[in-house]
Length: 236
Ligand code: ADP
Image (tube, rainbow, N blue to C red; front, top):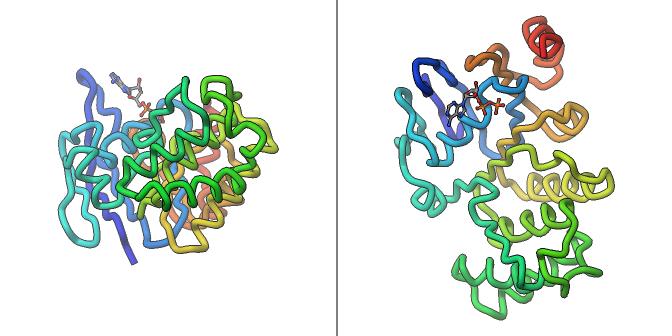
């Protein structure tokens, strides 16, 4: 069943259409990959779906209800969250306290936040660094912390923009497992990523963009075999 229905999204910068007549469905409970070469318009789509950028044309519906152009906080109330949105990491606060604060900012009690923060520290392998200031964490550890902060109260739809970029393979696998676990619990993901092995591993379906348009969509293996997709990546 379609959770988000995206129809004819258009966004121009200057005279140029960065996103041009983009339509696709995000289905309930899936991990959908949004792929395509650099500059193809993926982040601009994500910005529109998460309320950071207004579309110049087109519609976004959530379970049939028009949510086009709603600001990020209103979308967050409906469970649509872009990962960095809830992840203002305080550099001078410990990793654990950042998790605690994120939970309380989302309306959880201190006791509940503490319980969830402890479980997340374990799951995200942040135990050894949990009492260090967040500013002292490595880039990958900080990404893991951001995952924890975002998922201390799991969003219905999580939108992730290149979460694996420049992250050590061991931590990448922790992230992938974290996403798989939430997916198994029924949560929905829209994943922008350049990392094809991880996209193939995690996603059931993909939408491929090139020069602002959707050039292929559907089963991940079919998309990756599509000639237009192969050409778009070769041209990169
Ligand atoms: P991707 O995420 O696939 O790399 P983007 O959505 O970031 O692609 O960019 C798509 C196109 O829109 C690019 O040509 C980029 O230069 C342009 N673009 C994106 N954001 C802006 C902006 N704020 N102002 C002007 N041009 C932009």
